Amino acid sequence: MEQCRFCLDQEDPKKLISPCNCTGSQKYIHQACLNKWQETMMKNVFTYPETFSLSQVSKCGVCKSKYITKPYSKYWKWIKFFTPFISIIQQYSYSIILFLVTLALFSGLILITFLTNLLCILIICVAICYWKGIRPRIFATIDGIRLGFIRVGNPVAEIMPGMIISATSAITQGIFMNSKILITNYSPETGAVGFILNKRIGIEENLFYGIGGPVSPNSQHIIHNMGELPQSARVVDGIYIGGVLNQIHPEAKCMHFLGYSGWAPYQLDGEIRAGVWEIVGIATPDDVFI
Ligand SMILES: [Zn+2]
Ligand SMILES: [Zn+2]
Image 1 (spheres, helix red, strand yellow):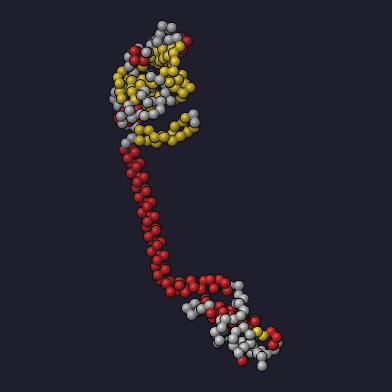
Image 2 (cartoon, protein in one colour):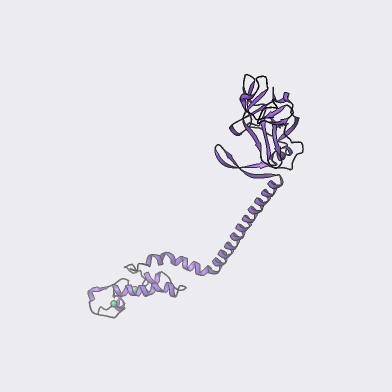
């Protein structure tokens, strides 16, 4: 007599299958009934995970042979894939949680320590820079706005208009290398203005042309020895700045500068104290008009 071992139904014997090695009354089952049974077993993975094993679904519990039909559930491949992990996780759950918590705590600590150290180093760097008189400053150049750093220092009493300073070996490149500069304006609050004396680019009649410095390279400035010239100002005895070029007497001495050198308040003071510049002394006309 052929009947389904699950639903015990004898009707429709054509739909009965024999999926395992069982014989006798255990031999036949409906495909749908086998699926139902396997699905019930699969649910054990969630309800009784500690006793669940894949063979409960894929093998016959009586004859222990593998069912010839595969479990049809769409979740089967996932259950098959994760079951080994589930048992490992169950076995080591406390260790795993402990490990993850420890890892989280430690990585947090390490990150906080790292960030704190970074912040400390940054604060120390900024403090050292301020102590050394280094200040950030925004420069407007022909190429655009850029951020740079200047060195400031307490006022140096010897700096005054008419003073000549010369670059020390601390300047190893650029327009200021080996330069001698006549300071024409100075006050600690407004900074300093000067002109490089030894970067001459030509001479025309008795008019010398030179690069005064890197600031406003297209601006023109004259330094001469005609004290009476309108709109000119005395730098020091025998040296004057400004005035109208065509009023300069042919016999007069005159320097024509393109651009000038400028320092922010306390910047030249800081650079002199840092040994970037050396004070040469008060200029005489012979120093300037050579
Ligand atoms: Zn059945
Ligand atoms: Zn069997």
